[in-house]
Image (cartoon, rainbow, N blue to C red):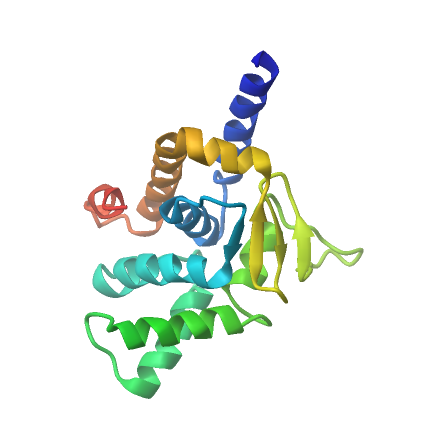
Length: 199
């Protein structure tokens, strides 16, 4: 039991550490989405994750105009949403049909989308011998296995246990780090804590 407790503490610390330095908000949004799903089984479909991702990004970017990226390039989800809104028109809310269609866009955008970048890089991006980041379609880390082709992630037993036993702690860590990230990119917005505490 002591060994399991130590491992739990170590995995929570690793989770917190991977949220320290990021050039975009993908990791925070993925972590928060998984926690919002409150998974009962290890297998989570991309559609389930994208459902939460759309909620977070639509609220943060389109409702509150938060900058979610480090450079001048919008997040991949924001780009997918813009493509949709340019085609079907923008409203200040999402209908069920809007949300379903945007979820499909995000899940199907395997070559240059949210899942392609966040899943291989969740615990640190690997590089090839030329120093370029690589994004394998299938991979694994201490937290989950993922398969872009099957459109699923499979949580490790340990990560699922920690979510079930320490969900509020993990969510507090995620929101704290996400808040710090956004405050650096939105220095004039004093409501970021309030915006993120909604989750």
